[in-house]
Image 1 (cartoon, rainbow, N blue to C red):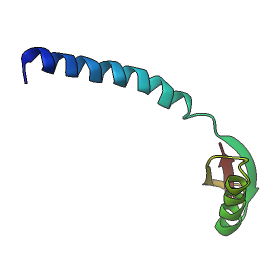
Image 2 (spheres, one colour):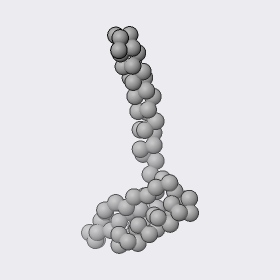
Image 3 (cartoon, rainbow, N blue to C red):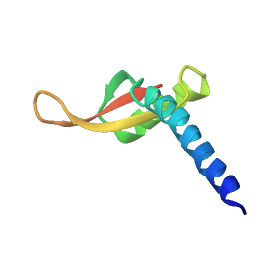
Amino acid sequence: MTIRTAALTLAGAGVLASVLTPVAGAHADNWRFVRVYRALSACQTAGHGLVSRRQAREYRCENDYDKAGVPVLDLYAR
């Protein structure tokens, strides 16, 4: 491997990284809130249903608390 080949490889990797970083960041914050669930199984079933009906690409259930301090799960989808 010559110095020129190594330099071109490193430059190409840098350009690729600079192009992919904004694309990955643009998709990081587009989660939308769907609903609050009391049970993990209910949250996962609803999220899986959204994905299977192609209303979302993926989902996540996050721990949260309601106003009374009771643990609940927030369903987010994108």
